[in-house]
Length: 160
Image 1 (cartoon, rainbow, N blue to C red):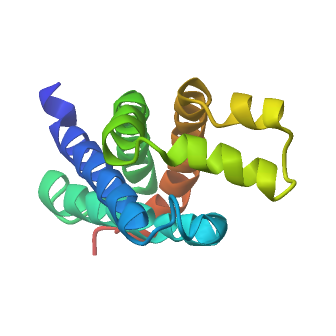
Image 2: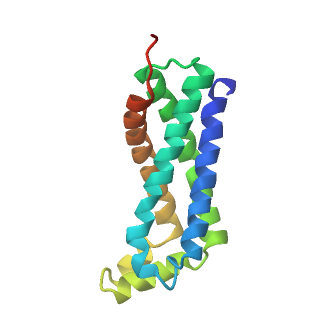
Image 3: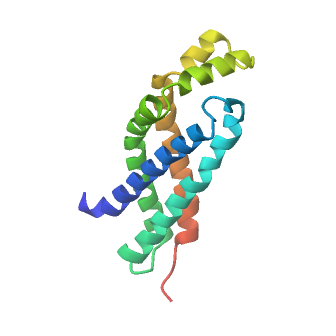
C-alpha cells in the first residue's frame, strides 16, 4: 500500500472535490429551485475532475520519478487513482445523497416526470440510491481510465 500512497492521497482529494461540488450544486439551487439547469451545470464538474488528475500526475512525476515520467508510468498511476476513486464512489454517493442533499433524488424524479422526460415508474427506478451508486461506479471507472489515457500523454517527460 505504501507504493500507492500518492495515488490513494489523490483519490481522497478527488472524493473531497466531488463532495465540495455537490455542496456547491446544492447551494446554487441545482437540486431544487434551479433543477432545470442541473443537466447543463453538472457537466462542468469535468473541469475540476480533470484538474485533479493533472495535478496528481504532475505530483507523481515530480516526487516519485524525479521529474521524468513515461507515458506508461503516468497511465498506471492514473489507473491506480481511478481504482481508488471507484472504491470510494459508493461512499461519496451515500454522503452526497443522504447528508448533503437528501431531497435530490426525489426532486430529480419529480422533475423528470413533470418535464415529460420519464414516466413515474421509470423515474422512480432511475433516481434511486442503488441506481446512482451503480452509475457512479461505472462512470468513475470509464471516465477515470479515459482521463488517465489523455492526462498521461500530457504529463509525461523524457530525460534530457
